[in-house]
Length: 344
Image 1 (spheres, rainbow, N blue to C red):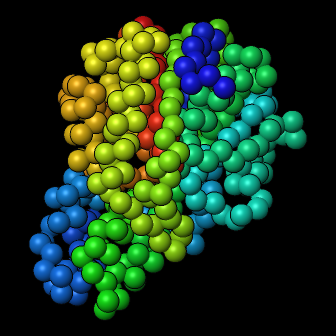
Image 2 (image 1 turned 120 degrees about the horizontal axis):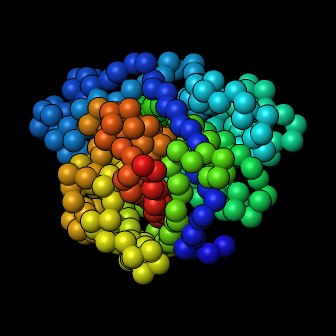
């Protein structure tokens, strides 16, 4: 599959988001970690200071991973009842899963009542999964292998967060251990859904114009995790991720003529302030055009980009006539960037 793709017939027909109901402050996490903070002499406010994340949201502990994506999909499909039976492809792009089998996509599809002709697949690429799902869906629409594609994702970070807190309170945890587990404390919970369909039938829908993607699989050891825990070499991960993003943006320049000024709104994967600042500096992106949701929602994995897009539309940050960039980097490493054009 080509790493630079042009699209002429695909549009983002609709989108929706969902949010974990429990709001948790970074200061509350530090209170829970008070014995560790005191023993290691870590400064108060270190979580927010190092990440720019003040809050994250959580679902109840008993909520399945699929619930966030399912709720977002239900909200989305309520807006388009006439398109429900035209969906023939569904990707679930969550990092977490309810079970190893069956697929999370089948669970969401079953709850929605999607028909037997719908191809349901789990599509995983760490935090990049949703953008990859959009790209693959558009590619299949362009080749007429599908007419409408539903993409969903949901994350519930509570189990991982609670397991991390328990481990960090063990008496032998060192400063190095704390920072290896630091990224787990930034995670938030939410859901997102998008419907990709034929541009000719939806003249007011944002156009999916093209995408570029590159990979650095030799860096697959920089972030590894499961529900028991996640360890990250944050400095090396940021350095390698931004370097890959720089190469990917260079491909966009050569393929589509992108410049740092091309996009009125830039929606990146929401990792932290340091990652966002480094990305803007390296790619020479105007910082005031980057829509940031990490301060109030944390890092929601593959939900982050579509959730932020939906929120930017609600807040009228994204408006008719604009070009919008969706940029994601996923552990592994993989990077994709997509151009959207909002019709006048």
